[in-house]
Image (cartoon, rainbow, N blue to C red; front, side, top):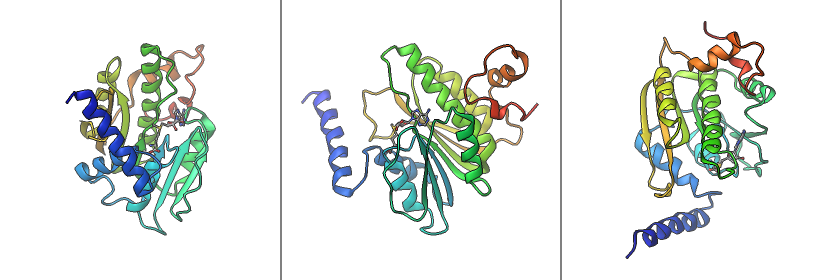
Length: 235
Ligand SMILES: C[S@@+](CC[C@H](N)C(=O)[O-])C[C@H]1O[C@@H](n2cnc3c(N)ncnc32)[C@H](O)[C@@H]1O
């Protein structure tokens, strides 16, 4: 039996299971496996889900937070079909846009217990460019944590191994006390996809240096979309 055949069978297994159990994506099982391993939702009432379409992670998060008092906010470039759960709301927008970031911050009364990012850009097939765009989205998610996450909250973010990935992990470690690199078994074996699971914001945390410096020292440069919101913070 070839490895490839076994992997294809596993992918098919999660695809069929999602269909049978009414989940919108096989990705739901990745989040369930993250929950089983780390217990990210054990105390959660407010959850932000970045890159939420078609809604598989929203469904899972919605099961864990209180049906009426809990709040799960999903954001995506693409419209998300209504979930008809009292505790789920969605925003259609690009997280790189300032206005969308402000809408997210205003949508939460108080801070979030969990911030999730399964965001992935549409790939163009050029590894360097795709990797850069992916890490840029992951950095926006990390900086939203600085603004919006409770001190003892959880952060889960998808990244692809290679390129800037190690640098990004160091940036997450500068922000959080607990940081693990996790590959759920529902994630395709062949894929470079990994999830960083982080917990407990450091009181003396620092946003990634290159982003802090951009706003203050290179005024003549065009800002990277989505970065401005954070420039007046810290230092
Ligand atoms: C892998 S899918 C997410 C699947 C989702 N977790 C689920 O369980 O259904 C990645 C999503 O990231 C979204 N995305 C990519 N770039 C984005 C951006 N700049 N702003 C918001 N969403 C973005 C895509 O539209 C896509 O729906």
